[in-house]
Image (cartoon, rainbow over all chains, first blue to last red; front, side, top):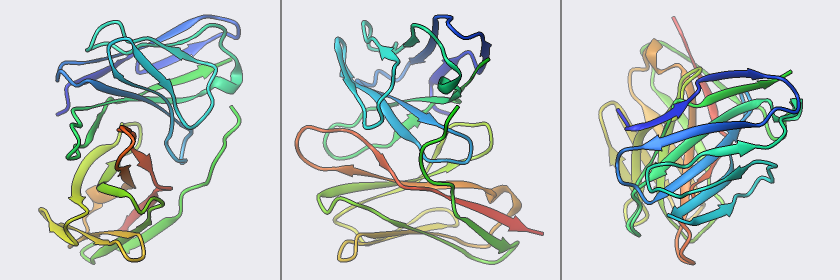
Length: 114
Length: 114
């Protein structure tokens, strides 16, 4: 079992609300990632971080923002949720140090904006 | 929300038969590859990995083959069981440039027929 946790697992929220998806890992990993995945579709990288105070946008443009104030915590925020944000959001972390290491994934947050 | 991307191809296999799932990767500089299994409603789980200095690696009931000449990766599952039904993704990690991103392939849905 990977020690990476996402909350909430499911969220239904109204348009215009601000939301924060939580992601925490207890493995001491410096690399963390957010992926967006629609049902039955590919994973798309939307944000990543190489360490504290480091955040980068991924390959898929996203209106969400992230922060990395602590090593173990990598929250994702949507300032004003819209129906187009409805998707599954997956958080991952890695202890990659140049030789290659797998990313560990959380269970995901399924977001529905109504 | 609006979905962007490809719907996953499906491989149907009779229980007890061997399964072969294929993946074409994009970056000839990639030196580390991973296969993930994603069950419905869950995050991807690590199955097996392989480094570019190898062309074959075996795990429990699974084998990964790497052909760098044609940039092709395959996952073989022996004696496929109903619990193997899931979506399988390959991921590559491009070497160099200080990047630690994982690039995921399209994914294949494996259906095990009783």
